[in-house]
Image: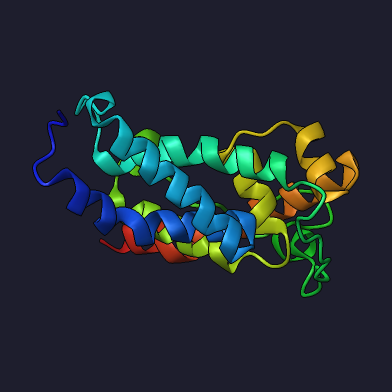
Length: 190
C-alpha cells in the first residue's frame, strides 16, 4: 500500500507534468505518451515501491527518466534530427571581450545548492530550457537530465561528438544568460 492518500488520483494529476518533460525530450507525442503511460503503469502496479522518502513527483520523474532512455534506445533510428539553424547573435561575442574576459562583471549567484532547492528557480530553469533553439534544449536534457553519455546521444541524433559539445556549450551560455536575467537579477533586486 502506498503512503499517499488517493494514490491513483494523484498519479493522474501529475500526468501533464510528466507529459511535458517527455514531449520536450522525445519531440514525438506518441512516444511521449507511451513513456508516460509506462511510467504510470509501473507506479500503479507497485504502489508499495513508493516509500514516501521523496515527493511523489520526484519519484515518478525518476521512473520516467528510465522510460525515456528506453524509448530513445528503442526508436533511435526514427528520432527526428531536424537541424534548426543556430542563427542569432553570436553569444561568445556578446558575452566576452576580445581578451576572453566577460564584457560585464558577473553577479554573485550566492549558494547554488540553496538556490536549486527553490521551486521557483526550477520553474525559471524549465522555461529557459524550453526557449533554447533547435536541438539545444533536447541535447541539454539528454546530457544533464537523462545523463546519457556522449556516444549514445551522438548515435541517437546522428551528430558528431564535436557538434554535440559545441551545441551543449551554446546551450549552457544561453541558459546562463536567461537565468542571469530571469532569476538572479530578480533575486538581487529583493
